[in-house]
Length: 266
Image (tube, rainbow, N blue to C red; front, side, top):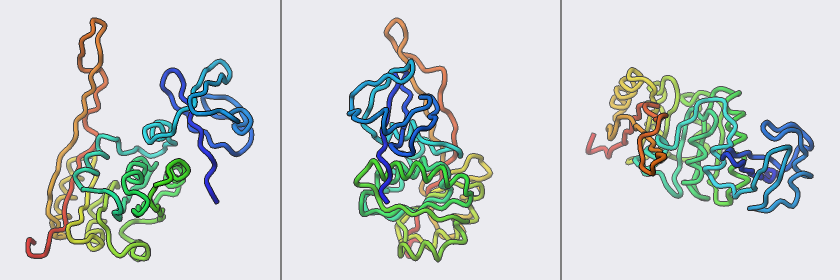
């Protein structure tokens, strides 16, 4: 069954609303009670519409807009960290990628756009309430992007679903672990990686980084990069100059990236 059409409305203040064109009349937070199939019928990209006292413009649904309007429950990996992981791990077209700690699907949305129509993304989440929210966001991506990868959601603990993963792919090019104790999943994950494949851990605390580092080395992986990304935004002043903004995004997590080296290098 094809996902319902998704309409994105942008308010003048930059807030974006993602609305499914199905489900009949309902209350949508920030818009009020509307029937999308009636209220938004015939609204084209660039058209403006007034709902209540607010004016909205229908915009093209790109990934930044879907990310801004995504449903959330669990904390998501931000673009600054997602970009580093994707670039350092060399994730690209046609790859087979596993992420454990699917959560609200923030990283999965980024990966789904990178992998292309022949890529495989497997998301594992043990909490049903998180998986439910994340699945909404990935289904929106499927409804929006014609070149999205094949995506599979597995419910359970990643260290216990190896057989299910192997039913989908023979091996993995990359694994990203965003979970409280990633070191428990590193031994089984390393066995799924191809030679030259990479595994990453997203660790909020130094202790988590240290434990993951030890587990990765014990599993025969070579640590390639470990650290944190610091982001500082700048703003324009009234006089026309620029200065650091007042709300910098500092530490979000420590990142660890390890490679499964050729046997002669171990």
